[in-house]
Image 1 (tube, one colour):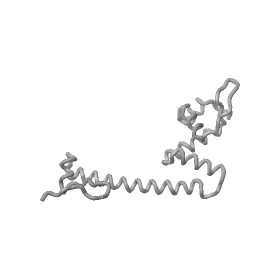
Image 2 (cartoon, one colour):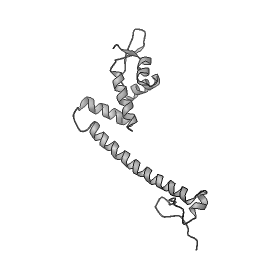
Image 3 (cartoon, one colour):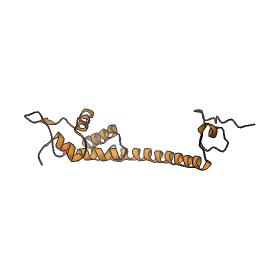
Length: 145
């Protein structure tokens, strides 16, 4: 395959041309060479690189983390500072988010079951399952005497 112009590369990967320029500014893509007419020309293997970037993003990696992954692979192949280490960190983050979301889901289900329709009224009720607390962790609910 020959070099690809910006539009061809963007179409092949499913991004827009501005995304390519943004990735260049972020250092994910090397600056392409230019045709005599000034068109940006990307090597064909850039398609694979961009597919890796997009897949990593779908797995929850930020662009900064993707840059670290790419850098680790280019400069230290085989070391645990690359994909495995970053994947372990991302997995821990995902598992924590899942635990947090489970608590949120269960609390919302309890609020629905309790018939909470008014946050102010619910906050004053002892049967409200919503966690109305101040930042110090003290419950602000005032129980009726």
